[in-house]
Length: 405
Image (cartoon, rainbow, N blue to C red):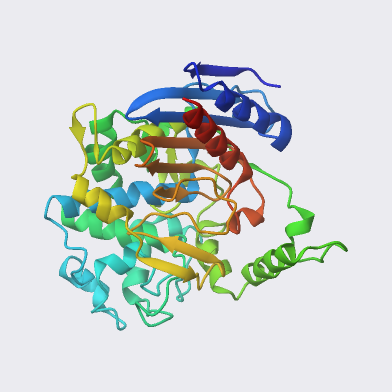
C-alpha cells in the first residue's frame, strides 16, 4: 500500500478507508480525493504514484488530465456569461458566431450545444494529423459540418466537439483571446483553483501520466463468458457497437485520439485547448468549484452564479437513450445527472461531470457536497457504460459519514 497523505476531519475516517481501499481492491496507481461540506474542506487526500513505473510520488500539487470532467468547467463558463446577461441560452448560436450557421445550422440554439442535442458529435471532413490540437482548424470544420440528426430531435454525446462548440461561443461572447483565458479569469483566479484548459509548459512537470488499464475481458466484444448475465450481455453488446469504427461513438471519441490529438501524455496534448477533454486539475479544485455550486453559487464571499442560475444549470433537460453512447442518460444544461437503475450512489439532486477513466466532480445541494476525485489509472471501456467503482466507493463512504453525524 502506498502512503496516503493529507487531512481527514474526525467523523470522515470511512472516506479515508475507502480511498485506501481503492489502491488495495482496484489497483489504483495514483489518486486524490477532496470533499467540501457547506463550503468547508473536510477531506483532502492524495497518494500513490504519478507515473507507470512508480518512481514519482503523487503530491499535494499533482495535476492530471480529467478528460470529460472538463465539460463541467466549460459549462460553468457558459452559465457565468448567461448569469451576467451576456449570453442568451435560447438564442441561436449564429447571434454570437455567425459562421456557425452554415450547412443547416442557422436555427440551433445555444442550449442544444450544452444538452448534446445539436447533432454535431463528429466531423465528416478529412482532418490532418494533429488537427484536434488546432483550435481554429476544428472551429472551421464545425462551421462546415452538417448535423447528423435533426437538431433537437435526439441527444447524443458530443464527446470532443462539445468543447469547441461551447468554448467558441464562450470565447466570442466574452471577447477572450482563448477559452482558457476566460476560464482562468472567471473561475480559477476567483476561487483560487489549480486548474487549466491549455496547461502551460511551465506546469507540465506537475502533471501525472495517465496509465492505461488492461481491458476487462468480461466487458469486451470478443466473446461472452459462459455465465454471462443479461445485464452483462447488454453491456457487451453496447460496447461492441461503440467499438465499430463506423459508429458515431468511435468517430466521436476518436477525435481525441492519435493521430488527431497526439498522445494524452504528450506536451502537445497538455498545452492544447480541448474544453471537452483535456482539462488538467486536482481533486481539491473540483471539490471547491462544485462546493460553490452546492451552496447556490457562492463560497467564501465569492459568488460565481446567482442561485437562480445554479438551479437552471442543474435542471434536467434531456433523459433517455443516448444516440452516440447507446446508453440511458440524463443531462441538464451541460452537466450529467444520476440515472435511475445505474449503480450510482450520488443523491438525486446531484449534478456534475465524470471523465473517461474514472474522474468525477459534482455538487449535491441537498447535502452541501462539493466532490472531487482524480486519478491516473484509466478504467476500462466499460466505464462508459456504468459509473466508476472507485469514485462510487467514495460517494458511498461520504454518505455513510453524513448519515452518522
